[in-house]
Image (tube, rainbow, N blue to C red; front, side, top):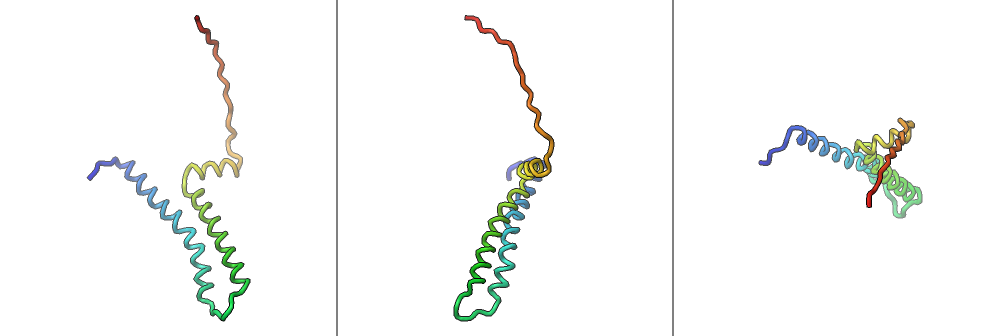
Length: 103
């Protein structure tokens, strides 16, 4: 068994849980409406409204996947906070030095 520090172990566990959340969130968003659609009585032909609903759910699934990635991972979440809520502005510091070269 490998020896891992407590802080590394905590980070691994946290990363695992965040990965589970990132995976389950979009699946739930697509599973619930599609299961309702599948339980609906079907007749012989397909309906345009069902096709439209399926396309909308696929689009929502892709959006939810991207949103889950952005909200689960800390650096992405911080970037969004600064862009949406106009966080602290970055100050640019210019450093100049006099350097002489001898030939």
